[in-house]
Structure formats: structure tokens, C-alpha cells
Image 1 (spheres, rainbow, N blue to C red):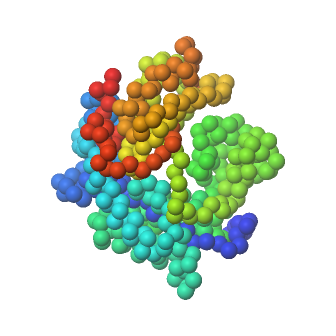
Image 2 (cartoon, helix red, strand yellow):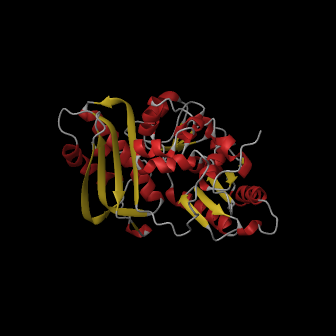
Image 3 (cartoon, rainbow, N blue to C red):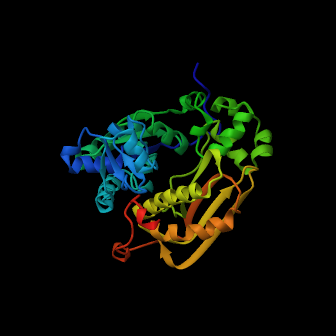
Length: 374
């Protein structure tokens, strides 16, 4: 029996989430035919401290994924071909894709070089289905760029983004209003936007594993245990997400964090982990053509106490070398000697666009090796 129409479902929008398939690796395979069908890894040097930016689907079969150390990736797949990033080629491909998306609607919200939301509600007023628009978009991307993408279609961002992962690569999945609740019910709560590893662990202790389990909790209970986030969890468990597509979305910060399955006690491991994170953050900054003025380090201790420490510079910060140089002092300020941590994170804020010509020759490429920073 189909689930009831979600609450607050009046004036439903038609949202498409387009996500390029293994974008950087796909560009490399497109431009170098000899790489097609082979396990390709875009990232840093596996002999140094390189990190995987992305990899082809052939490499993913070996368990390789983005943000993994290049050395580990090579151990999982010795025959993998490592390729240095070519950011301008990826930006050009992204410009082509975004131009295609904007030919359907001005309501396009890029999330990164390789994914974006579209609101095509107006384009469906004549009876055209959002799924038909999405299929045409995918076909045009393939024909005009030689690359493939996947798309999810639904009545809000939450479901559209989940749907785009459902039939990768080069797939299309539609979640209509009457199927939203049923689609979400069996999913693990960690799949929901805004539910991170620490929240997953806390919910698991409450015997909440799936979205249906979460849906059975009252709003009062969730707000009591999770504060303002509790209201968001209550809504998304019921397929409610009223965030609009924002074409002029202003990014305030770029960052990453990692919760460890076992607390980190070794300070050298903390430093290495933070260096890998710095490479990831620098990669995203470079991909978005941004630089920031403040580097913030976050540490969470076993008792869930969280501290942040920041360094603000006059000059723009946009490369791994600059971020890594700040880490020893920030780590010492955030984590006392002898303390262990369950989470570490790095964020760069105070962002501004930078011109390509202003990026210094010493700026490291996307997730490049940082062995010279030891």
C-alpha cells in the first residue's frame, strides 16, 4: 500500500539533482582513450603522502574511494594508473555541463564542479515531466561533453540527491510524492543529509538504525536529545525538506572532518591525518577557485567535549602547503599533550574568488602529494 502524501506537500516543486560520474577520472579517460576500461586514480603520488581525489569505476571495484591515501589505494590495486590532476580541464568540462543545465532553467545551484540542483517546476507547467527533462539533460551531457552523469528527480532536495545515487553510473531515478516516505523508510539514518557519524552512533544507542525508526520518535524527544537539529531530523524522516534551489548560493566555508572508529592517541598520526585533510580542503578550494583567510581546526575528545582553534591571515589561503604549515601550532592549541581525540576537522573560511593568474607556482594541485612538507 503506497505511503500517504508527505506532510506540507502543497505546491510541490520539481527538483533534479545532477551528479557527474567519477568526474575527474572520466575526463582523463575521455581525453586519453588508452585509459578507458582501466583502474584510473586521480590524485597525489602513492610514494609520498598523496590522497585520492577520485577514481574510475574500474578502480572502485577494489574498494578505492576519494580521500583514501594514495599509498593504500596502490596496495589495494597495484595495477592502478595514477594520474596527476588537471584542474583547468575539469573546470572547462564543468562549465560545459553547467551551461547545459542553465539552458533549462535559471534556477541552478552548483554544489561543486560536478554536481548541481535544478528547479524545473516552471518547465513542467505545460505537462512535461521532470523525469523527461532529466533524461534529456543526461543525453545532452553525454553527447556534448563525452561524459556521463546520473540524475535524481523528486519534489525536494533531500530526495533528489538520494535518488541520483540510486542508479549510478549514467542512471536516472524518480521518486514521486506518493513514494517518498516508502523510499526513505528502510534507509540507514546515516544516508540522511545532516546526520553524521556521531549522530548515527547516538541514534544507534537509542535503537534507531533506519529512517523508519527515526520517524517513530516524537518531535519533543528529538529536540530534547539533539536540540535544533532534532527538528530537522523530524522533518527529513518524513520526507520534508523545504530548502529552495539557490542560484546565487554564497559559500561561507570549505572543510572536512573525520570521526574515528578508535580514538587517536598518537600525535604523529593526528598530524598525518590533518595533513591528508588539508589536501582535501585545498583540493576543494582549488576546484571552486576560492581562497580563505581563516584556518580553523576542530577536535572532539572522548567525552564529546569539542574545541576549535583558528588562525587568521591577511593573505589568502588556498593551497595545501599554507594550511599544513599552520597545523602544528593549531594542533598544540587544540589538543593538550597526552590527550586523545575521537574527531578531527579542518575548515577554511572568509572565502573569496581568486583569479587563475594569482595562484602561485608553489600551489599544490588537487590532492597532490605533500611529501615535501614533512
